Length: 190
Image 1 (tube, rainbow, N blue to C red):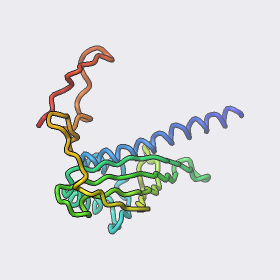
Image 2: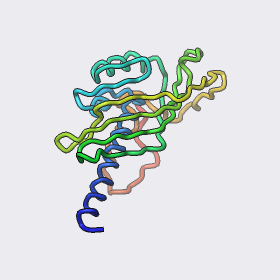
Image 3: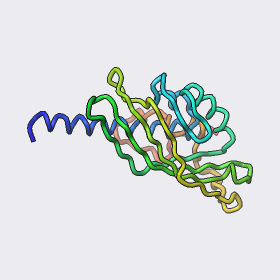
Image 4: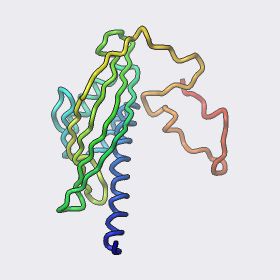
């Protein structure tokens, strides 16, 4: 392989990781109900087709802003992630991400307690050096009801996930030496 081939291969590895990071930040934003983080995953003129919704990114954010509070928690887990680049330009790519999403609600109705198998088909564009979603099609492959009666409560005193910026993932890094570990951790803001 010549230097040009190695440079292109390295560039593609870096681009794949940047694209994958966008997908992961999107999932975090949804699960933490951080709509600013979700917005940052899309170009301003992006579109999203998500179940019964089809529209612009601003319309999508308004839609999920009404939908997400119905749940006490959501968790999106991603698995297979394939990125394919357009041959005619280095700035366009399509990714397919397989995932599972868990939805929990205080309401025992099946619509509030379900698990879905999904795929995100994302057309990515790199603009001004930044990869973001230009078009998303969310495909539902299967849905399963998760019986609320079978759910086990989180034991009292355990740190739990938060659906806002008070979640542990948003805590600042410790001020001590790199790698210092404080077993007590930061206080739970409840």
